Structures are given as structure tokens and as C-alpha cells.
Image (cartoon, rainbow over all chains, first blue to last red; front, side, top):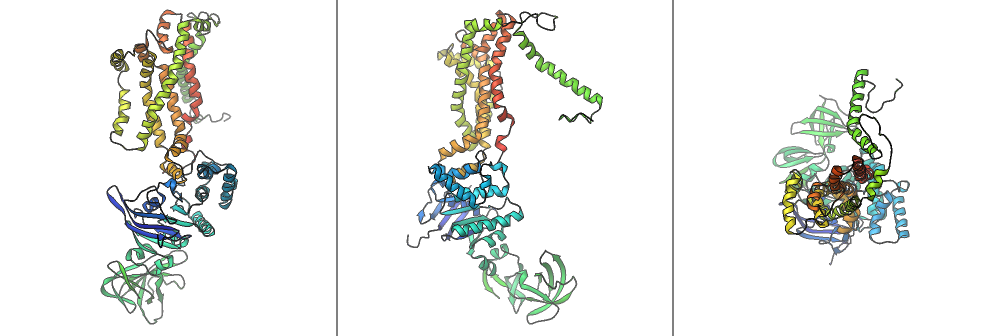
Length: 337
Length: 280
């Protein structure tokens, strides 16, 4: 093991379920202390990948290395990983304290030591006041924190989160995801999180693996994914996109055999002409809260623009400029302009 | 209106509706409770003759007679030996089958479950008659073992279907979470699956006990004339003893069932399984 990482390493993972290839020769390296999202639509294989890391599924081919050790054939109870399940999977017949203490009890830890560690972790997730409650008596957000505490108390080499926020309401989701990120940074724990929510992935991760159909389309930082989406699929999946078939030159769409992707925030509109701007008519304005979605008609293409100041009205004419475009050929990024 | 809502929302109904509902409830009560009350009074009465509305006198003599008659004491003893053994043996045989039916989708799983059910829909006596011929060749007629086996048959449906449903109701990810926490498969079964299915299993055990305890047809066929249990003893008792003795015996026969159902009432009615986790 020459360049084995102390984090997680997936090499050539392949998983077939029900005669269908769910994961196809997947490679992924997560550095120690890093937080990585597996992002994709449902059915893309992200949960299957996570379950292979946890040990609930054994891959047909490939290797799972955790903290420098090959764990491919080990069951979940033998792996240094801890998982937070989508529905939290708390044991209803045990109190919060007992739920969190269970992994330690199984490790045959002494009573005093268990007491201390459970206290510590419940303090971290701010749940000491609920230690004697049953899971059924506390709120969804609190249940989520119990599940997190139960994972953290094991001091795992890697923390696995399966859609941990999907059962929370929108407000709570933002708070909890910040809490998780904060905790993850403080403890420096290697973390893999599965999500279908791009906002969640962009705001929480060091790096994101965008998955499609059992493969990783692109694995990079949130910023890079947004600025330089390597494939048309990623560009469509992350953020918004004007997708026009043709070519691109001099700030406008020209006939061609490529695909031009333009982010709505890279389209501007003004009454006066500047270099690189072309005549445009406002066809529709949709208020979207802190910005407006403006539909523009130009000679070369119809474009959506996100505009937050000096919002035009329907029927206004003026000039529109595209500051950046992504050009794809056969689904792959060939250049940005 | 001064009267509080009593749950049936009778307030909104007219006086006539309320009268009919009241009459219906009273009617049902007479039919369900009437015989039981009669039985309870009969067990303590010297004589009770038509058309008197209450017994002619009170006595405990019938109770003494029952506990002083060796055949009856023997029957009581036999019943309390066979029924618990039947429940335990049934649990040992059926619980693994129930778990398998709940967790694994093997070939013939549905046939197995439906078969359990179907066997119970035929007239038992015909089934027992053919079993009896088998028991003769195996020398099981008139033996305790024979009685236990015949009583066991009636409990199998309870011990497979109810626990199977209870096992199936344990969300899989609760088991996975325990594996993830480091528990072996056996430990997960013991600490999570079995523990969470326990209310259902308890109900199955109560039902099985009552079934074995009350079983008369097969027990009579296989056991008599060597072995009598309380229900089979009733046959001769009803024919040859005063009616008060039968009343005493009926009450004794009902005691375990009433106690057990009382104990398991919470599990039968309350949804302990539904509390505290989200089934998706």
C-alpha cells in the first residue's frame, strides 16, 4: 500500500442488484478529515455506494479501503464506520441514553467509561436534558441528533450520513446541516454524506462526487463544480442553466453542432449598449424572492437571466450580455468562453 | 346539557335513538354476560330451581367436592402440565419458522403460511381421526406425549402467524443500525429483533396457551381413557355430576385465560410497536 490514504478509498467498485448494474467500476478517494458528498438523483447509486462503504452490501468487484485497511469482505459490525440512517433508526424501546450507549456496551466497555462518553457526546449534540426520554417522545430534529450522537460515540474512522436532513423541515434543515458541518470540522472526522439536494451538498462539503447512473460524473470542490462542470449532466444538475444547441462566439450563440450552457446569473440586461451586448426584449418576469427570473428574447437565442437590481418590465427593450458560457461536445466540456 | 359526552356521542341523538341504543346494549349484555353470571351464581348455590330469580341458598360444598374428587384434581393437574409444555415446544418449533417467513423470501413461503391457515379450516375431528390411526401404530394413544402433540397442532397457527407479523413489523434499518454499532447477527436478533417483536410473541403465547388449555376434541380422542384434562373431564362431569360441579369446573377452566388476557391486555390493545420510530 504505497499511497493508501488514511481516509476512504474505493477502487473499481461494481455492484449488481437484481441483474442490473447499479454501480459500475466506481473509484473514489476521500482524504482523512474531509467531508465528501455523494450527490445525484434517486436511483443513481449513491445510497448503494454508501451501503457498500458501511458493509451492508458486498461489491461484486472492487475494493473498499478504510483507514488504510481492506474491509471489502467485512460485515458492518467489523468496520470502523458509523452510519446515520435516513430515518434515524433509533431503537424505540431504549431511552436516548441507552441508544447512544448501545455501541459501547457491545464493545464491553466499563460502566463508568460508558457513562462518561455518552454524557460527553450528548453534551456535544446538546441533548443531555433528553437522556431519559424515549425516541418517540422527542422531535424529529432531536431524533436526528441522537442518531448522530450514536454514531459519534463510536469514534469511527469514517462517519456515513444517508440523507440525514431529508426528514426535517426547511428551516431546521439549514440549521442542522450547519451543526453537522461544524461538528465534523471540530472533530476532524472523515465523512461521506449522501444527498439529492444540491444546496445541501454545495454548502456542506469539501468535495462533491456528482453521480449519474452508477458512475461518478465529476469529483471536485463545490466552486469548481459550479464554475467548470465537466459534463453537460453536471452543469444541468448543479445550479440553473440555459441550454442551447449550437456554437458560441463573440458573446452570442451561433449555428453549430455543440451544446452551449449559460448560467442565468451570467446573463445581464441593460438599457444601454456595451461591448459584447446584443439587443434583447423582456418577455416574462418571475419574482423569485431575492432575485427575479427574467426571460429575454434575443436574435440568437432565448435566455433566462437572474437579475436582482434594476429589474426590467415585460416588453422593455434593451441589450443583454453573456459574460460566460460553457461549451459541450458529446456531453463533455470542451471550453469556457 | 348537564350530561358529559360518554364517547358514543349520544347527546346529539333524540331520546328515541338513545332508548334503542340503550335497549340494544342491555340486550347484548344479557346474552353475553347472562350465562356467565348464571354460572358464577350456580357454583355457589345449594339449589336453584325454576322459577326462582335467585339461588335457594349459598354454599362452598361444590368447590370442596371438586378438589376432593381425585379424577378432577388429576384433570386439573394434567391441564397445567400439558398446556405450558405445548406453548414452549410450539415456540421452539414455530418462532424460527415465523422469523424465516418474515425476513426471507424463500420459495414456497406463501404456500407455507397459507397452508398453516388452511389446515385449520377443515373440521378438526376428521383430521384427528386420521391422526389417531397414526398414533395407534406409534403407541401414542393414551399417552401424555400424544396429548401434547395433538394440542400442539392447534397452537401452530398462532405461533407462526402472529410472531411472523411481529418480526416483519421490526424495521430492517433498526437491525442494520445495531449491526453498524458493532453487534453480531445473533446479538442483533436477541437485543433488537426479538425484543421488539416480544409483545407479538407474548400475545401468540397467550393465544396458544388458551388454545391448548381449551382443546377438547383431540385430547379426548387421543387421551381417553388414560389421560383427562379439564375440558375432557367436563364431558363426563356434565353427564354424571350435579350442574353446580360443572359450574365450578367452568370457572376454574376460565381462570387462566382471564388472567393471561388481563396480563397481555396492554400488548393486545396498545400499539407499543408503533411508538417511537418511523416506519417508511
